[in-house]
Amino acid sequence: MPDSHIPVITIDGPTASGKGTVAALVAERLGFHLLDSGALYRLTALSAMRAGISLDDEQAVAQIAEALPASFANEGVFLDGEEVGAAIRVEEVGNNASKIAAFPGVRQALYELQLGFRKAPGLVADGRDMGTVIFPSAKLKVFLTASVEARAERRYKQLIGKGISANMEDLLEDLQARDDRDTHRTVAPLVPAEGAYILDTSDMTVEVAVEQVLHWHALL
Image (tube, rainbow, N blue to C red; front, side, top):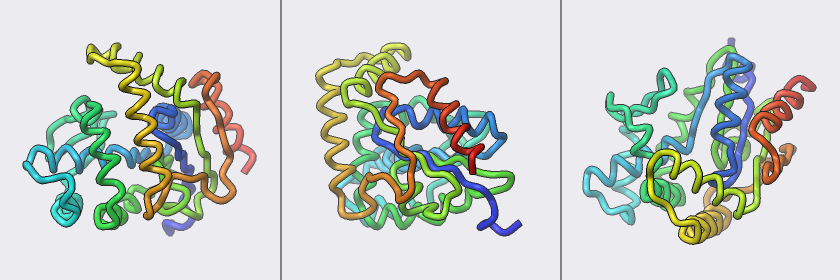
């Protein structure tokens, strides 16, 4: 089956909007493959940090991205065979991932890698530019959003639940800074894709959000 005929559902949105959880559950319900594009940027940031490379050096970080030994299996995220799912969720890594995602060189390096996740019977891809840049011809495009206050509270509970210390005011500031950076970058800014369904989850449970995406999918 040609790649162009393999269905793709894109779920884009800002940090901590819940898109990752919704995407994973939708993929599970449909039996589709999953692409967590944000994890690729986090893996690149983590790899650069471990190598002692300056996060301001676009060329060096892009070289890291080009040869990124990333893989996803059994709900795990691996970097050169090491499970790093927890390591890439640390706030410092997330902030650095947002920073390097603004580099055109890094985005180009990861472009082909992301396209390769499109395999039968289908793909659910979550990120910030899945529907606008990576899979513009996707069957279904969703833009998941929520108020910055709701997102900060979710991130706070998530971090505390994992035993990671967190401060609500700091989280709010970080999210606002990342939103500003993501929406105003010159390359692939965070915006709803043309024809995307907007889903505000500020006062919505994950289960309801998943059912809404599945409903839209069934209509197509």
